[in-house]
Length: 394
Ligand code: CTP
Image (cartoon, rainbow, N blue to C red; front, top):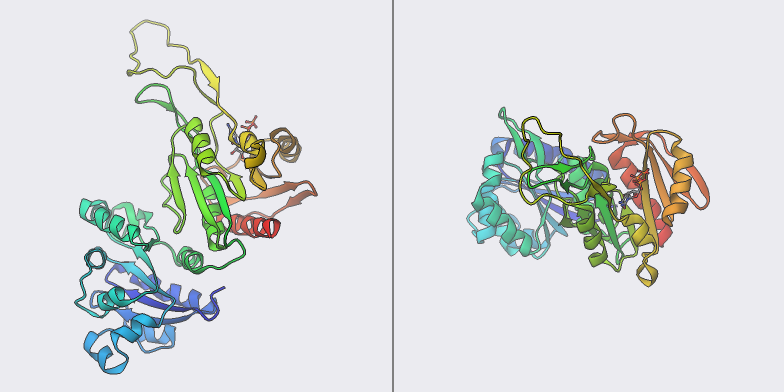
């Protein structure tokens, strides 16, 4: 997918810098030409020799040496994309403020190429107001921010700040450079659970993690689509290059989807709560000793998939739903497709560890029949589905 594309990789100081080597391997396997700039901090974690061996190019690490050979302006003009992997808090701050005191920052200031930044740092540094303001500034200037992911850090600590994994970074770079088959198309994806309030502190929810829906949004973007991801409360990082609208309730999710129309296609992956409380209490409900627990009166939520399938002239050309079933998976999916009026149903058996898990075994139910896909990673399900959507919308 990246044949002939030129990527200038800037490797800055973070223990995650070793992942830049694996990313380089994936980029080159994908056909890209990669050159690397190593900062002083980056060189504490990976060697110039390792980067040179894996890029097959001379590595630039010194502003004045580079001036003698190629010059930072020529280096800045060479790539289709400058990918900062990993981006340390310090380099991010310099980028946000336009500092240019070494080769990496001079190139970042001089380039007109797309810039992708994959932050990596300790969660406290990531959460700091200064970093968050720097990230917001870079995002508003069109820098694609990839990650960070949530999870365990090198120190015994966990939280947001982990560098995204190399295959995800490859997807993000492909998406940012894509003139793929979905270029010019707009797709809406719903993801995650919804939270339906009972009172200000309690809510009805389900086990959905958003992993499958977020992966679908990323895969569609990787094929060049403009993607609006309408997500319930999840801890997944925003997929790079995707516009994310965060909602809590089913009614908010429907309103956000309708506001995002028109679209060429929609993929309803969210595990929308079928019911909400009929009247959420304004104040925290108190338990009265000895009294009978209060009944929970429920009201039916709108069906987002059915509503979008029946949207008249605004109906997206391709409407795809999911079916979460614990028995009679295929029969239920076939009747669900008819009942909701959608074009395709991706059916899965959720009686195991699918909800919140990493893998999925699905059946694609279309007008033409039922296809059984083998069990695979949710990211792979997403890529296959995105490829099918691209064919259908071609
Ligand atoms: N869905 C939706 N809005 C709802 C409920 C479901 O958009 N209020 C969508 C889901 O995103 C999914 C599809 O409908 O694409 C099927 O969801 P599922 O939970 O399997 O089915 P339900 O409609 O909830 O029916 P049931 O629970 O009876 O199986």
